[in-house]
Image 1 (tube, one colour):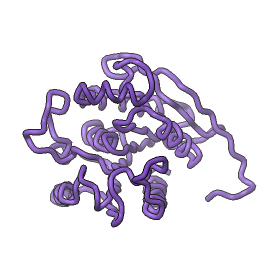
Image 2 (tube, rainbow, N blue to C red; image 1 turned 90 degrees about the vertical axis):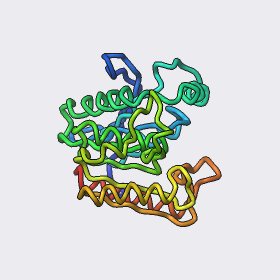
Image 3 (cartoon, helix red, strand yellow; image 1 turned 45 degrees about the horizontal axis):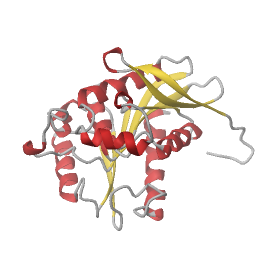
Length: 251
């Protein structure tokens, strides 16, 4: 727990890592200074892009005591403002699921290979990043905890499948080995409360370790303090749930 006489110091920088197929992509990396050992966190950015909110959230997790990396999943689409690059990603139907899963795994391996690592790594994402985080945790047995914040398109109709998203993440649930935390707003439609119910039913059916928290008066993206959909009370409680969950499973 933070005390006012606690010494704090962070290292934060943009680095390059080898992602899918050995491609070099950039990533934002932040960690507490000191010998550790520290658990790791991989942050999966949302469709608005590899933006300031995710850079700040990387620093937030580092201040919480985690070595944290946020890979730029849109690196191959070129550079510009996060909004401009995200527009390209949206037009392309999102990045291919296989590519995102591999890029995120590269981030996790980067963290666990550091001498400061305690050997454990979690993954966190919001919106499309929540979907990618869940998919990555189901398909790559490297994660020790997964946080899905209102990840849309986890539950998908067959008609919604695309070449970039050929399989609904829900179909991989049997392979989920890490405990899952889900944070959702009851006014959201992507995922809708019914889709969250379907997701939870599959987790229960397969005997997975999970906890879902659903918030009245909140819709999509209610952690985003810079947007009208921010809901302070629900966001603060949600962050407390995230902190307690990761403390339990990673530290």
